[in-house]
Image (cartoon, one colour):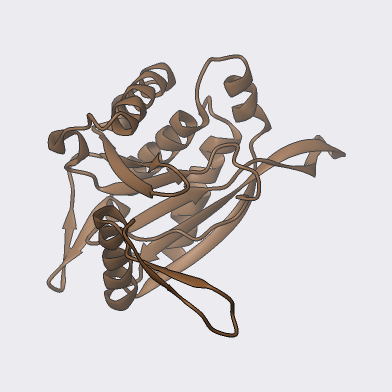
Length: 233
């Protein structure tokens, strides 16, 4: 980021920095969404022990589990696989999940959204492979515009990043909804009437309240949670 001359004050020496093009674009887009989309946000902690077991054995990635859970829920609830445009609802025939990929570094952070087309038709194996390929291409700066286009829903998975257990979701207009998943954390869970150690993740669903209302939003989050808890569903 370009830097201007340092200034002095009671706060000590301060250096003024100009954001780069990526940072400006992210900030501008976020401000536009917050100003124009009346969002509704719901959260739920879910038992991800089984899903994380698949991750440990290399059978699937958590992003793939989350993508499949969201995609199948959207196929089951087509009113959520939609957009809000000019006072009208557009329901989409294909379920295309956008995966948020963190790029850059601490000095120049940024993010790209990679499109997993027809995510509801793909197995966990196929989703794991495709998401890994798209993530690598994004971080290498090789993601093409077609690989970012056509998304109907957005997923952000923080993975194992410490301190990122809970965070808000941002609806990518004109999409109807977006989901974030925090880093796993230890917590007691109830299984077969016994309290045992478990691994939870916090899911946060944000919806455009003009198209996905309270009860429907809760239903969508519940359907996603069910398939995260039991990835075999």
